[in-house]
Image 1: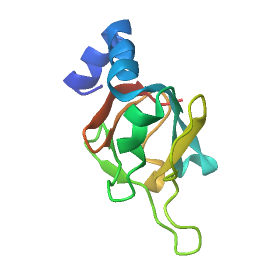
Image 2: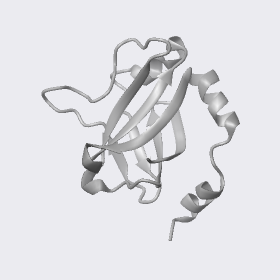
Image 3: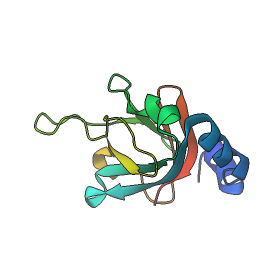
Image 4: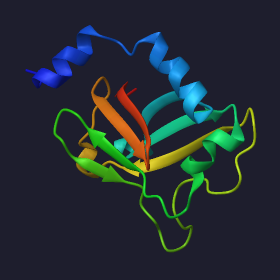
Length: 130
Protein backbone atom coordinates (compact mmCIF):
# COMPACT_ATOMS: atom_id res chain seq x y z
CA UNK A 1 0.00 0.00 0.00
CA UNK A 2 0.91 3.67 -0.12
CA UNK A 3 2.59 5.49 2.71
CA UNK A 4 0.08 7.52 4.82
CA UNK A 5 1.36 10.82 3.42
CA UNK A 6 0.82 9.56 -0.12
CA UNK A 7 -2.69 8.31 0.77
CA UNK A 8 -3.62 11.74 2.09
CA UNK A 9 -2.38 13.25 -1.19
CA UNK A 10 -4.49 10.79 -3.21
CA UNK A 11 -7.61 12.14 -1.51
CA UNK A 12 -6.69 15.81 -1.75
CA UNK A 13 -5.54 17.21 -5.08
CA UNK A 14 -3.59 20.50 -4.83
CA UNK A 15 -6.00 23.26 -3.92
CA UNK A 16 -6.62 25.88 -6.67
CA UNK A 17 -5.50 28.45 -4.06
CA UNK A 18 -2.07 26.79 -4.08
CA UNK A 19 -1.75 27.38 -7.84
CA UNK A 20 -2.76 31.00 -7.36
CA UNK A 21 -0.15 31.32 -4.62
CA UNK A 22 2.53 29.94 -6.98
CA UNK A 23 1.67 32.57 -9.57
CA UNK A 24 1.52 35.41 -7.03
CA UNK A 25 4.58 34.45 -5.01
CA UNK A 26 6.91 33.04 -7.67
CA UNK A 27 5.44 34.21 -10.99
CA UNK A 28 5.35 30.67 -12.35
CA UNK A 29 2.77 28.09 -13.31
CA UNK A 30 3.82 24.49 -12.70
CA UNK A 31 2.86 22.39 -15.70
CA UNK A 32 3.94 18.83 -14.92
CA UNK A 33 6.51 16.30 -13.88
CA UNK A 34 6.83 13.46 -16.33
CA UNK A 35 9.18 10.59 -16.96
CA UNK A 36 11.49 10.81 -19.94
CA UNK A 37 14.64 9.10 -21.26
CA UNK A 38 12.94 5.68 -20.94
CA UNK A 39 12.09 6.46 -17.30
CA UNK A 40 15.65 7.29 -16.18
CA UNK A 41 14.94 11.03 -16.02
CA UNK A 42 12.09 13.15 -14.66
CA UNK A 43 11.22 16.36 -16.46
CA UNK A 44 9.86 19.23 -14.35
CA UNK A 45 8.22 21.75 -16.67
CA UNK A 46 6.94 25.19 -15.72
CA UNK A 47 5.85 28.42 -17.37
CA UNK A 48 7.24 31.80 -16.31
CA UNK A 49 4.60 34.52 -15.96
CA UNK A 50 6.68 37.09 -14.06
CA UNK A 51 10.44 36.86 -14.75
CA UNK A 52 11.37 39.07 -11.79
CA UNK A 53 9.54 36.87 -9.29
CA UNK A 54 10.75 33.69 -11.02
CA UNK A 55 14.42 34.74 -10.97
CA UNK A 56 15.34 32.66 -7.85
CA UNK A 57 14.41 29.48 -9.76
CA UNK A 58 17.18 30.27 -12.25
CA UNK A 59 20.00 30.88 -9.77
CA UNK A 60 22.90 28.69 -10.85
CA UNK A 61 24.10 28.27 -7.25
CA UNK A 62 20.76 26.92 -6.06
CA UNK A 63 20.60 23.14 -6.39
CA UNK A 64 17.09 21.89 -7.21
CA UNK A 65 15.96 18.79 -5.33
CA UNK A 66 13.08 16.50 -6.24
CA UNK A 67 11.75 14.40 -3.35
CA UNK A 68 9.89 11.16 -4.09
CA UNK A 69 7.15 10.99 -1.45
CA UNK A 70 6.67 7.22 -1.66
CA UNK A 71 10.32 6.37 -0.87
CA UNK A 72 11.70 9.59 0.59
CA UNK A 73 14.47 9.53 -2.04
CA UNK A 74 15.96 12.91 -2.95
CA UNK A 75 16.87 13.23 -6.62
CA UNK A 76 19.10 15.89 -8.15
CA UNK A 77 19.70 17.57 -11.49
CA UNK A 78 22.69 15.79 -12.99
CA UNK A 79 25.56 17.89 -14.35
CA UNK A 80 27.09 16.06 -17.31
CA UNK A 81 30.57 17.37 -18.13
CA UNK A 82 29.70 18.00 -21.80
CA UNK A 83 26.44 19.89 -21.41
CA UNK A 84 26.51 21.34 -17.89
CA UNK A 85 23.44 21.17 -15.64
CA UNK A 86 20.24 20.01 -17.33
CA UNK A 87 18.31 23.16 -16.49
CA UNK A 88 17.90 26.73 -17.67
CA UNK A 89 19.90 29.40 -15.89
CA UNK A 90 19.62 32.38 -18.25
CA UNK A 91 17.35 35.31 -17.38
CA UNK A 92 13.77 33.98 -17.67
CA UNK A 93 11.39 35.43 -20.25
CA UNK A 94 7.67 35.98 -19.64
CA UNK A 95 5.35 33.42 -21.23
CA UNK A 96 8.22 31.00 -21.89
CA UNK A 97 8.19 27.38 -20.77
CA UNK A 98 11.24 26.07 -18.94
CA UNK A 99 12.28 22.64 -17.75
CA UNK A 100 14.81 20.86 -15.65
CA UNK A 101 15.67 17.18 -15.64
CA UNK A 102 16.19 15.15 -12.49
CA UNK A 103 17.97 11.79 -12.46
CA UNK A 104 15.61 8.87 -11.74
CA UNK A 105 18.07 6.05 -10.96
CA UNK A 106 16.71 2.56 -11.49
CA UNK A 107 13.42 4.14 -12.66
CA UNK A 108 12.59 4.54 -8.97
CA UNK A 109 9.78 7.07 -9.48
CA UNK A 110 6.81 5.63 -11.37
CA UNK A 111 3.88 7.35 -13.09
CA UNK A 112 1.05 8.11 -10.66
CA UNK A 113 3.45 8.57 -7.73
CA UNK A 114 4.02 11.86 -5.95
CA UNK A 115 6.99 14.19 -5.88
CA UNK A 116 7.89 17.61 -4.53
CA UNK A 117 10.29 19.98 -6.24
CA UNK A 118 12.34 22.42 -4.16
CA UNK A 119 14.52 25.12 -5.72
CA UNK A 120 15.84 27.20 -2.84
CA UNK A 121 12.77 28.63 -1.09
CA UNK A 122 10.48 27.64 -3.98
CA UNK A 123 8.48 24.48 -3.24
CA UNK A 124 5.98 22.67 -5.45
CA UNK A 125 4.49 19.86 -3.37
CA UNK A 126 2.38 16.80 -4.13
CA UNK A 127 2.90 16.76 -7.89
CA UNK A 128 1.67 13.58 -9.58
CA UNK A 129 4.18 12.07 -12.00
CA UNK A 130 2.94 11.41 -15.54
